[in-house]
Amino acid sequence: MADERRYPSVAELLPDGSLNPFPGGSWNAWQSGQSGEDAFVMVNTVHIFDDDTLWVVDQGDPKLPRDAQKILQFDITSGKLLKRITFNEQVLPKGGNINDLRLDAQHAYFTDSGLGAIIITDLKTGTSIRRLAAHPSVKANVERPALDETGTVMQKEDGSPKIVNSDPLELSPDGKWLYYQPLSGPLYRVPTASLRDEKRSEPGPRRRSGVCL
Image (tube, rainbow, N blue to C red; front, side, top):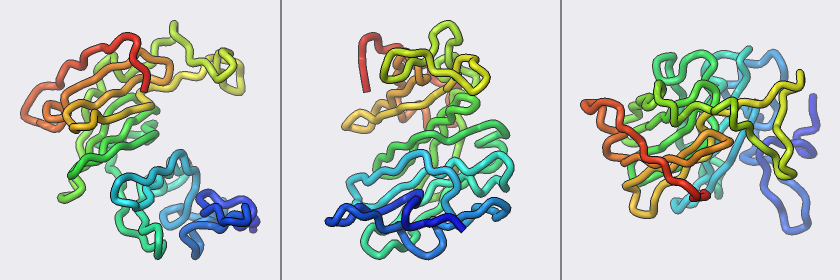
C-alpha cells in the first residue's frame, strides 16, 4: 500500500511543515482495482470558499465506475463529508472531465474540459444540467495551442499538442456573469440567469478581449 502520509492526495499543512492526510480514514488510501467511490483517485483542484468548507474535484479514472469522478464538500474542522455530487451520462457523457468549480448562493458551476461544456448544479435540489456543449466558446482551437509557464506548447506523451476545452472559470462578484475559456483562450462571459434557464435556447456568450482571470 502507498504511504498515504507521505503522498496524500489531500492534506493539511501542519505548523511543523509536515502533511496530515485529510480528512482521515481511507480517503487517501485508494489502490488500483478499487472502485474509487469513497477515496480520492485523481484530485484536480481544491477550494475553500466563503463558507469555510473544503471542496474537492476528483476526476476519477476512465477505467473506474462513473461515480469515481465526483465533487466532495468537507467540514474542514471535523473532516465530515457534507456533500457528494456526481453526474449521470446525460450531464457528463463518456469522455467528459470535470475540471474546476465556482459557487454562488445556490448553485455550483463546473467546466467540462474533456468534451467542452458548462455544468450547473442546484445545491438545494441536487439537479444538474449541461449547457453550451455545442458552442464553439467551450472548444479549444487547435490553431491556438496551450502554452506552459515557459511559453512552450503543451504536448501529450506522443508529442501532439495538448487540447484542453473549457477549463478556467470565474463568477462576477454579484454572481450575474460567468467567465470561462478553453485553456488557451480566448475568454468569454455569459449571464448566469440565462445559463440556468432551461426554457431558453443556449445563450450566446460574449467575448472579452484582453481580460485575464
